[in-house]
Amino acid sequence: MGDRLFNILKAERERLGLTQGALAEAIGVSRKTINTIENGIFVPSTLLALKLARTLDRPVEALFQIEE
Image (tube, rainbow, N blue to C red; front, side, top):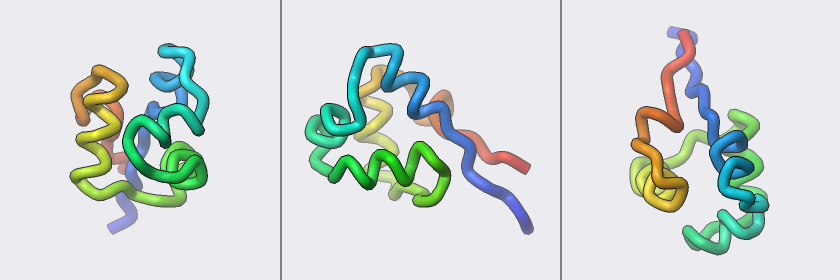
């Protein structure tokens, strides 16, 4: 099973004019965490994905999708 998690986190963050650091601070993680999620290196926990969705004012499924 070669599924990967695709995300549009960077585009949505930039849409709101947020830096990685500002988004990280808003949800209580490091800038590196945001960077690794945006680059598909780190898969966020459900709690972290929900925090990101709430902060970016988007449903989780709009931010994250399974890339087959």
